[in-house]
Length: 382
Image (tube, rainbow, N blue to C red; front, top):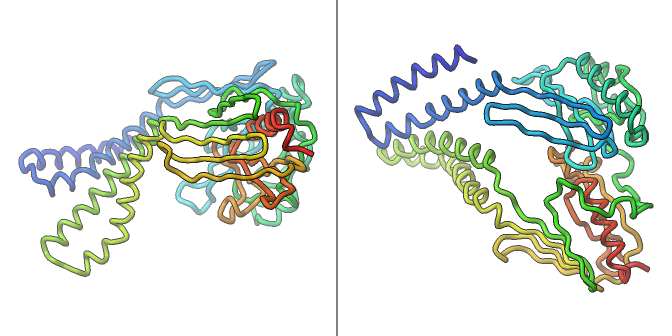
């Protein structure tokens, strides 16, 4: 990476020198993708040098400490909220990046992912240690509702991948392969105990307001600097290249080139639209208002957005819907959301509304929302 960046730097210096002596719009647009590529390469090199991860196990929690050149981040999860430990696999042997294996710790909230490009033996060693520690200090947290190396996962893999899926690993956790796992027979989970979680998860962005008439849940968007920087990089890189060809098409008056550039221009416009969308993220709102005999849902910005009203006749039961086991929510692919928002709360109403879906949420948020509705809206239930 350092050698590539050195060569790229020499090219950028030559381009900058030309731009300094001939400061035209065309030269500026030509230089932009090269400068952005240099910045991207520099960030990747700094990340490679200074990026460090540490997984700390304590009697009450597991903490992922991530040190980078920009600072230090810590994600802490109580042992009681750990649901499973497995290997997260992305890519294939024939892809450009190869196979990337990480240890993924499924929790009631946002999952923890540790490592990168680990070998199978390294993943096994880390998983065995985590499982051994959790079973010693909080044995009731790990799920044991599905055997490891299920036949469904093995049927969708072949060769070395199948052998890897069926290789013996530490017992006591659920295997959820990111790209090989098949759907379960049912994605719906019945809630038999709604009093187990009535407090909101500590890391949830959702807030709850309770009154005599019911309860309301509200969500507020958060500003994401990293996502904004990434979109700015993409805009500069893509639109500068498209701009060069567009200028040539205008100068030469080539209709064919104009028609050829239309899909690339549309992609550029979509990238540009991402900038105000990310800047205004703190203004985005979602709200679920549960009154005595109705449910009102809203999602939008500055009061502009879809609103839905449901008349509640009588909720017969509440359940959770696991999106990881339903291909409809993943475009034909079954996997887990990076933020752990894999669940919906399903309200089964006896009226014409039928099934009402609230989500996406993490498992902890879904259980909290379901328990709060059950406790604060007794008129809904028969």
